[in-house]
Image (spheres, rainbow, N blue to C red):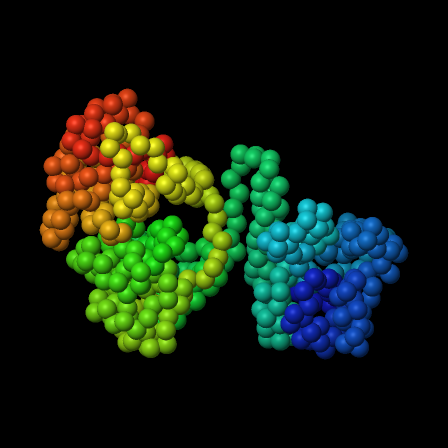
Length: 508
C-alpha cells in the first residue's frame, strides 16, 4: 500500500531562510494552511501569504526570550496524533487540536557557534530545544507527517510538492524521517562532545554528515565510503576521484608535511615516505626527495609545503604519480601538470585537523590522542661523551620527524636534510636497519657521516654496532631500555654520538 497522504497544513519555523521562499509559495498554491513563529512568521508575512501564529493556536505567548515557543500540547498533539486512531481523533476534537501534516524545522547553529569559539553562554543558547523536539515528534509519526529537518533537503521537498501535487506516500515520509533522525543524532553528538571536552566521559560518539562513496575499498571486491569534508580539506584542480588507497596515502602525506616549515617535498607510497628532502627551494627539494628512492616513487603521492613552480612541475611531470598536493601552483606549472588526464592535483587548504584518532578493531573502536609531539633541539638529551655537531643535530631532528610518520619497526637514515633510506614495518629492529642499509646502498648513497633515527629504544647494542660499521656518526632514539647502557658504551668506544628524546613514536 502507498498510504498516500495529502499535505493540508504545515508548521514552518527555521533559523535559516535560504531557499525557503519557493516552498512557501508552492504550499500556498496548494492551499496548505501555514503555521509559524518568530522570524519565520515575519518572513512569510512579507511574502503576503496568509500564516497563523503558533501562539494563536496555543493561546500562550513565546516566553523566556523565545526559549519556549512551540512546546505545547496543541502543537505536538497536532503532529503526533494518529490519523487512523479513533481514540486520538476524539481527543483531538475534544481539545480543538489542528492536524499538522508537514513540519519544516532546522536547528540553531550549535556547531558553527562552537567553531567560532563563542563564549560559553552564547554557545549554550544555541542548544535547540523546541526544534529538536519537533523533529523527533514528526519523524516518529512518519506514518502521517512529512518532516524536513534541514535546508539541505528543501530542493527534495519542493520536487515532491511539484511532482506529487502536495501528496506523499509512506516511502517518502519514511525517507524524510530517516534523514531527520540523522539530523537529531548528529546534533546531540556535537553537544555531547562539546561538554565532554572537560568531563571526559568514556563514551565513543562521533558523527559525520557528509559521505562520499568510493569506487571500491582497499581492494576491488570491497566497498568503500569516505565520511568527511574533502572540499574543506582540498581544492581539487584536476584528475579522477580519490580512491580508498589514495586517501590513506594523502592522510599520511598531510600529517608528515605538517612537521616541516622549511621548503620540503615528500613522496609517499603505502603510507610511508620513500623520499623526503628539505632545501632552500621546492624544486631542489623535489629533485633530492626523488633521488631517495626513484623506484618506489612510481605511482606515489607527492606533497610539497610551498608553491610548485614550473621548474618543479617539469621534473614532476616526468614521473607517473597518482596525486600531487601543494598549497599553490604557478599557472604554467598547473597547466603542465594537467597534461596527464588522470593525475589528481590538489591544493591543500588550511584546515584544523582533529587531535584524536580512531580505529575499529575486534567488536569495538579504539581511540587515542594523535601523536602530535615533534621534538626540537631542547628536547635532545646527550647520552654519550661525544655530542653531535650542529649539522648532525639538524639531521637528527629531520630523521626523527620521518621516524614518527613511518610504520614500526622502523629505522631512518638521513644526511644533509635528505632521506637516504628507511626500513619500514619490520618485526625486528635489526631487520629494519638491514633493510635501510640495503636500500641506501642500492641507490648509491654514502652512509659515512649520516645519522640514524629509531622509533623506539634499542634492546641490544647490535643496531648501533651495525650502523657504525656502515658509517653512521650520530643516533637519535627515545631511550628507556634496561640495556641502554650497552648501546651507550658501544657508541662511546667508537666515537658515535647519541641523543635520547624520552618519546617513543610507534606507528602501527
